[in-house]
Image (cartoon, rainbow, N blue to C red; front, side, top):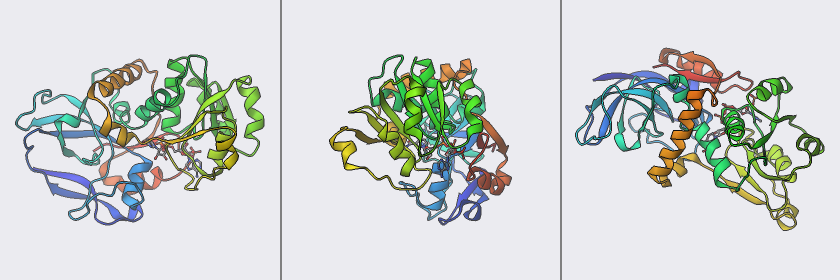
Length: 329
Ligand SMILES: NC(=O)c1ccc[n+]([C@@H]2O[C@H](COP(=O)([O-])OP(=O)(O)OC[C@H]3O[C@@H](n4cnc5c(N)ncnc54)[C@H](OP(=O)(O)O)[C@@H]3O)[C@@H](O)[C@H]2O)c1
């Protein structure tokens, strides 16, 4: 069958190198399913993949289809597919190219999406809320009432951190670079919202009542990461999962010698590659349930058809958005 997909054949600025093309898609092979795509977000990692700056580089010989996650409906099964049926809605993993009208996906990499979750929200669940979920669970043994510190708190990951932390009885200290976001973040459960800047350390004790901070989540890098690290409790952990400022981190020796801080990193892609299926299933059961209840929700600024890929990519790369940019193939 023929399908229309966003394709890039060389690395470069996404709006310049990614275009809509019609491609031939073979029938699903053994263990594969054909999925009609309904929604797919544009994430920073998608832009970095097209630019050629992401950790994994796709093979560009026949062009690559971007799109690290998405939501679609199964339309055809290959042989030896047992756990899925045509008509079922699913989440698409990274690596198959979600920015397409249809794609072929190994059935064992799909996550079945239950009814009751808005398709736009389901399309964004596999990367950002899952990242927030893992970072809150896997680095420090936090107890209800404990505080978590994060920067880029209004990002999709940051908002999921706020919502999942609240669900678990954890409290969040949220650093943003735009003061106008404070009320919005408090409305979804942020306990304190602080403005990025030199005087962060002086604001923290009053904001969290002097409680020790054992976990900080960093999506910015550079000076912002250092400001988080400086207020961590001795032995605390700074988890770096993003680098929005594209600035390296400087680690003062004293923070390691005298504070014994743990400087860790997290990559969702690797987690999925190594996780046990039952652990993945348990995480999605909780994320879907929260999404179904409206307790986990990512704002969407605008939805574009594939034909409008250029303005969609331009907007997705800009700061100060009110939410995610989605494609509706
Ligand atoms: N390691 C992993 O497995 C993993 C998984 C998911 C996401 N991530 C990473 O997490 C980060 C956030 O992703 P997302 O999809 O949640 O983002 P998003 O919703 O697209 O939001 C981007 C965020 O970055 C902020 N920002 C942009 N440029 C900045 C700069 N120069 N300095 C400081 N802040 C800046 C924005 O602030 P304004 O709104 O004020 O512009 C906004 O809060 C990205 O780096 C992404 O690659 C990593």
